[in-house]
View 1 (cartoon, rainbow, N blue to C red):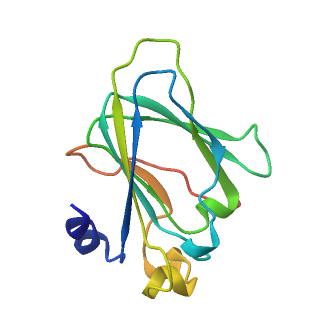
View 2 (cartoon, rainbow, N blue to C red; view 1 turned 120 degrees about the horizontal axis):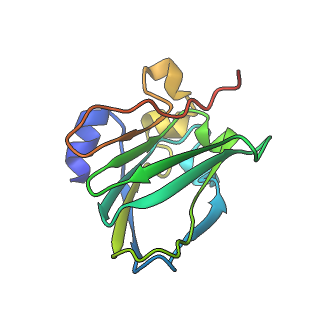
Amino acid sequence: MLQRLREASGVPFNTALANLYRDGRDSVAWHSDDEPELGAHPVIASLSLGATRRFLMRRKADHRHRRAFQLSHGSLLWMAGSTQEHWQHCLPKTARPVAARINLTFRAIGPYGVVGSGTPSSRLGLPESRVIPAGGPASAGVRSRSR
């Protein structure tokens, strides 16, 4: 799976993180994936398996500016460019009954080519952020650039 993602995207992903969300009580708080080892403009690909969950993004400068996505089984969330610099994201708790969900997050850690160089993805022709439904075309996603 990692190799297919590398070949399809041209990004040298070298790590995968697996998270299990057992039910609607499991969540992840607001944060940005902005650790130094990810580089200045990290590319993060997040594959959802199992139950559909709501994924939220909000601008750091104005928390009222939000986007919501339904991450269904097989969907791929793509965050690139300055997304982590300008946006936070979370997977909130939900009171409605939901089955288990596994999230596989792919990243390139360290000084590996594009990601480690700090080259913005916009200069590489990569999209900023979007959700790619399982078996479907890319949906209109969040553009992290200030307007």
